[in-house]
Image (cartoon, rainbow, N blue to C red; front, side):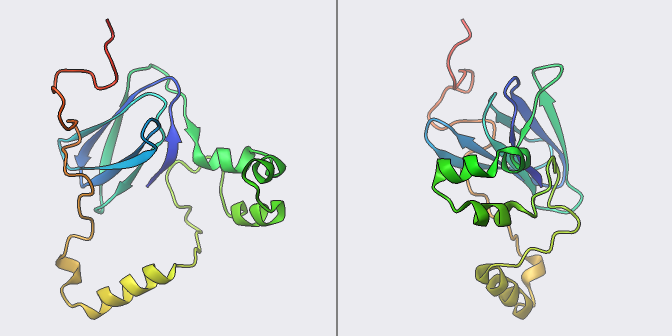
Length: 171
């Protein structure tokens, strides 16, 4: 997985070379996360400044990131969590500061590709139940574990002319 991040000075095209992935993008206008499954030869467009992340859905997935800036800046979620002072996060979101510090203690700054190798996360009840179902299903390895979450291809927007810029005109 490529950790959640954004590029304040560049848009990004995520091109799938091999394997498969889901590119998830937070739309700041609708306050929704959209998930775009991509396979070899497909591309997902991430507008400049939009929060996003990529998750490989197959082993040996290779993605190519193409930017419209020669030196794209990146703001990583792990850095925001780790470097924002605990008292600021606690005050801004009405949190217990001690609990916040304990919660983010395992976060490694500048992770980029994660989770870290030494991740010992405790699985949720839902994850444990899913694992147990898969162990009991002799055909689970043959099923597609990742169903497309968005019915639209990653390069089109619904009800929109494909030649029109969805974020306004440059002219």
